[in-house]
Image 1: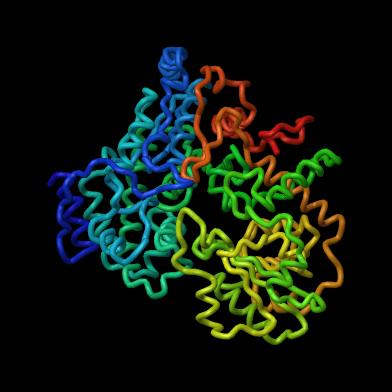
Image 2 (image 1 turned 180 degrees about the vertical axis):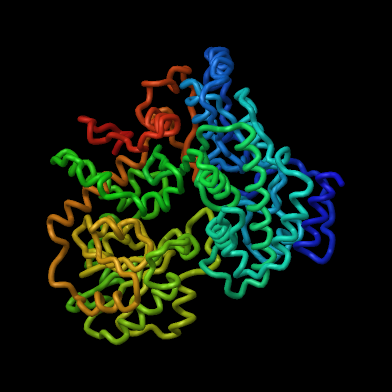
Length: 588
């Protein structure tokens, strides 16, 4: 049986009682209708490297040949249709080639039955996905191929690594599993639990699968995809014996499989993603930065020298967070000059009584697999907290719903406000909610508070830097940093809440420690690149401008050196901001 017929047969048996009709090949198109802040044509973000390098293009082609036989690096792009990530992977490939590495890519060639370019926007879309699979494959593979193949480097297609027998094998594994079994699945030393769970929650834009009738067939598609990815990459890694493997994000399907297989085979793997700061990127060894920053030893930043210049630099950046002035991933953009008392008046707070703030995460984004949660979910935490404060009429609770719940690339299909209304049709008189759609400035609102409760938001660090005590009930990165009250059970949480309101703000030594960690987190771990230019498009934040080949070589861009040295020599992915004596527009 041919590959195509095998794939069709397996999916029709696994997902739907009816055979999915074959779709005619459509003209490549963008997967979404985009306008305004979005780059609309789906193609103009592709970097044209011959144009970028100009007269130096033949020099690069020569360096590609000379790098053959060097350390083998696989850049596992996988999903080519990503205008935020794919261009940067071509830049990494150019830079690594100039440093003597033999760079390969691997790209999905329309073979996976589910991936991160799938979204449950409505019921019709979900039904189509369950029956036919991803609907952007033609465009995704086209732009991915155009981006990667132009460099003259080896591009492995995922389909060439999949065997016909993989499909019936995967079908036999997946077809009778329950949703619970799928979301906790392990096989042959590879744990698919987080990869598939994160992918399914992301697809639905939810933190749970309540009232999602198609959750089981969708989850089956993602586990099937994860299994096929795993087996294909196992063959590729063994065939090519890569010394270093690079994955964007390192989570979801299929990128989670890139990392899982590398770790299973004891290969060096690096995961990267776009950072908050303009022109900056997070890069980590062995795992996604979501976990790496959570697990990072405090020794990595505690011993930093500290001086007035460093404190001024991080303070300036943190104040810029109040408006997103120095960020390209913006959350708050308005109201930085509003007086906290005016916000209190608008909301209806009584400032003669203590106020405690609560900052939420986007629900689906916050529900990943971490061990140190006091509650099973963020919703459970919010419900518990509201019920607790219902009995504390001496204190007011101010809930700020994360703005990205309303204004994000992936639209949440489960909102905190709806969950609150469902469980509390009438809010207690001392509980106030700032909706995700509100333009009220979160930082200014929290200045009215005695303390701030968080689940996992990065803003918890900023609250401590502002002198506000923080209680972390979820997987916040500041949990283990000696900066907050980190609780691991509901009883621990209640014990801390019972001490509210606190009599003192954050101690000076704790605030200094928070500033030092913020310096490390925002200015050292987020690595800036001076060789890209910012663009005003949310789905294409940067472009690679025309410049000579030497711009990408050793010594031309400190941030690029840090990234390439980390990949090739396993050095820490830390930008040495503390060694810089002057401030530039790029840095803060």
